[in-house]
Length: 324
Ligand SMILES: Nc1ncnc2c1ncn2[C@@H]1O[C@H](COP(=O)(O)OP(=O)(O)O)[C@@H](O)[C@H]1O
Ligand SMILES: [Mg+2]
Image 1 (tube, rainbow, N blue to C red):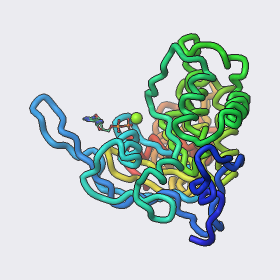
Image 2 (cartoon, rainbow, N blue to C red):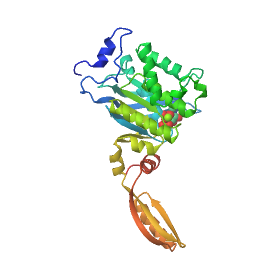
Image 3 (cartoon, protein in one colour):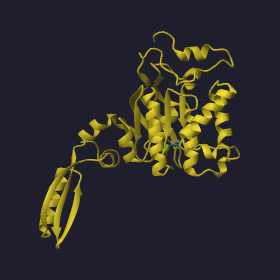
Image 4 (cartoon, rainbow, N blue to C red):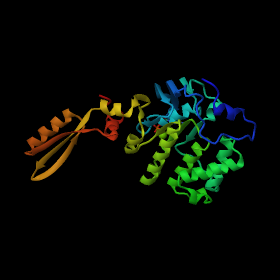
């Protein structure tokens, strides 16, 4: 690490001292590794007859500063367990988890991480403002006044200013998701881990959250989030980590993943006088499709190669066979 940056100032500042009111910047831009996970293994004892089962089968990945990484995998693939292991909420069997240029998890490291769990618990008698004040007091050393203006800023960011004094029990699922996100970034973390953050949001809310994620990544934080919404993930994430049954299927750039997956094929044909378009995921499937269509007396009008969407590529890799 180079010379101490504002973070060191913050840590050294006396209790009640002013917290620098910008995102905590890196010391001198010389450490790029935000999270490094090496050979992560985790078992749970499961089943009617209790038996140890490996749910994370020894995989590695890393996140860099300012990156947005989508964490994909079918239900039960191990995404939530990975996040819990990374955050020290679940004990790992073996492997290593290192933060901010290879430091192990410590209180100081935790202070620089924001987390939105898959099923957060909300004290429903609190108002949005009280909820953020509670977490802000836990995770920041902001003075009352600074915390108040940070909360105003966050409520504006997530478009909940009008619900500031409403109790959380009157919030919709999407509103809770948004206030949960605000809680995760209240202390301007350098690593933001979000477990299915967009699942309860309408398209408008998802777009707003995507913009926020982009903004915090631009300011230097690494964002790591799991999602089932491929369209949003494809647009937002430069990087992907894909799990299949606890094993790593892919880690790397989204565009390279889509390139590796090749193209899909669209076949347009006239069948019983009607024009129909059929999709095939691979050219071998397309050849079979064309043969079947011709055998049924169809007239093939057009065969077109189309770049696969992340959704198609994901279904092929993580749900069915495997990467080609
Ligand atoms: N606390 C637990 N005890 C036993 N098994 C668990 C526990 N948590 C998760 N699992 C199992 O670990 C596997 C991975 O689960 P999870 O990490 O929740 O997957 P995902 O988040 O990708 O849907 C699943 O088979 C699940 O049943
Ligand atoms: Mg999960």
